Structure formats: C-alpha cells, structure tokens
Image 1 (cartoon, rainbow, N blue to C red):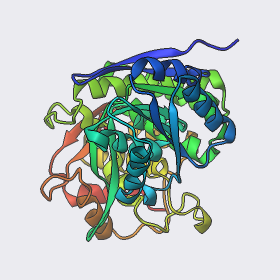
Image 2: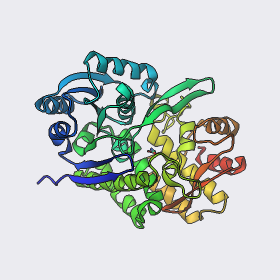
Image 3: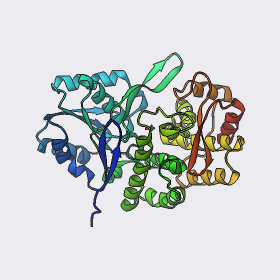
Image 4: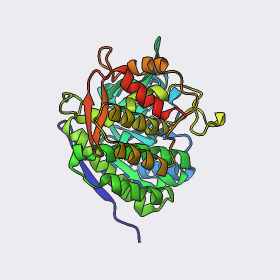
Length: 388
Ligand code: GLY
C-alpha cells in the first residue's frame, strides 16, 4: 500500500509553505498549481536527463490544471548555472507572455531548482515557483529555503551562487519515485547533505539521535528502499526547515550560528569542487567531483580542523569518517593541489569574510559553531586528512 504523503510546514517571516514528501507527491502538482496561483500560464523548466514518464506526468498535471505551458530544458551542469541560461529562460517566460500571477515550475535537481527559482525571483520582479526536486540532494536541501541563483566567472575563478535572490517556493513536491532514475553516484552525493544535517541537528531541533539514525538508514537508502527514502527525506527536510526558520536570510551573528551552520564543510567543498581534474576514485573519467562528494570531503576536513582546534574529540572524527564511508562517499582524494592553492580558493568563497576565514566547525556530533579567523595551520590539518 502506498504510504500517505508527509506534509512538512516551512514557517518563515516572508512565507509559509509546505514540503510534501512521499511516493505520490507529484500527483498533486495539478491541484497545488491550480490552487496556489491565480494565473494560467507556466514555464516548466526540466532537467534534460529526466525520463519521459516524469516529464509527461508534470506536463499532464499542469495541462489538466488549465495551464498554457512553455517547456524548456536545462542540462544540469554547474557550467550551465549562468546568467546566459537565466536570460534564455526569462525570454521563454516573456515569449509565453507570463504575467505576475503566473508560475514557474522547476522539475529537476539543485541546478534546475536554483536557476528556475532565480528566473521566478527576477521575472517581473518575482512570480510564483513550485519546486519539484528529483535528486536526493535537492529534496533534502536545495529546494527548501528559497536560495536561488547562478554562478559567476570572475578574475578569481568560478564564484558559486554569487548572483541570486531569496525567493521562497509556493510548495515543494518531493516525490521519491523520481529518484528511480537517479544514478547511484548522485544518490550517494545527496547523502552528504543528510550527514551534514545529522551533524548540526542538535543546533536545529534538538534531534539527539539523528546521527545514529542516519548511520542506520543509509544502507537502506542506498538499496533504494522507498520507505527509507521517504523517512530520510522527511527527517532531513524538518532539520532544514527548522534552521531556515530560525534565520531566513542568513543574517544571524556568528555566536548564534543560524542558517550559516548549513555551510558545514561547504567552504572546503566549494574550493575542492572547482578543481576540474579531481575524481572520487582516481579515475579521470569520473572527474570532476559532484557537489555531494566535495561536501563529504569538506565534512571530514572540517572535522579534522575542529579536532586540531581541540573542539572535537578523536572518537567523533572517526565516527564521521565511518559514516561517510558507509555512504560510499570519498574520505580522501588524490591530486589535491597544495595548501596554498586551496587556501586561496577558500578565501575567495563568498562565505569568507573580509579576508579572514570564517568556518563552520564541530563541537560534537550534532553541534556546530561558526568560528571566525581560523588560522591556516588548522585548515592545513583538515586538508592533510583528506589527501590520499
Ligand atoms: N544550502 C544552504 C542553505 O540553504 O542555506
């Protein structure tokens, strides 16, 4: 019997909406779209890797709800998360004569959601968007919380998410059936963000057993047990929703932490993932790393940096390495450039503040903290730990 869809409220100062998680969540796209927006035109932005049945289901649902549709595809590569692609989609919306009461629907992973969300945020100064995430990573993280945007190629290199807007979706439909077409590598990559949530869960909602629970459910998720995937997505969305609700626009002080805690491992990851020749298994055909793989390495580097600063004990570092291993994600990486190169890249991450490195580090499993002015030698200890 199909399990009922779980509805998780996201209650923010600027918006209230639900994340619907289940094995039939996309079935309600028609009624959700019809009830949430007044207009009857929509731009449907589709990840071009999705199978016809997923695309067909979304097209049929929106057509049944009476929407005139412009459909457009996006190839989900970081290099396509650009202003040029944004412009292409904005023109598609304008050609279809969408007005401010109309709708953008994002059907795909984080890249599609970020770009389509940014199109919705900027078209006519903002129209509604429904996020339909089709990757584990976008279900548990990117589709929830309203961050949208694109990368910018600057003199200093590729700056991730440098241009964007906060623009909350009207609803998020996380249908785990869509994960059937997700390859194992990307399923595992999504687990990196689940591990991250488990490592900050006590900050967010006093979820004391989340790490152990995550360690237990990972093998079932990898085996694609549908019930396990629904539980995993729902529990992670609750953590994400709680963190975002505490600090919608990432404005909390370092002492409070707030939404910045979601960046655990990410300053390392954003540096590592811009290096094109890194591969999770040393096979050049698998280069570059996907985001979740870089996050996994970033979590381990952050754990070792925390230990070097005497914030975290050795046992916790080992448990973190073990859970990353259980998820089949890399714990070390070959061909990592020297520390100076990585430190330079990390300093250019937009999360660095005024030239000094501000990192999210761990006090224990479940409790993270923002640390200002982390000196290079402590970061070097983190990098040494992930060098193969
Ligand atoms: N993915 C981090 C955030 O939503 O703030």
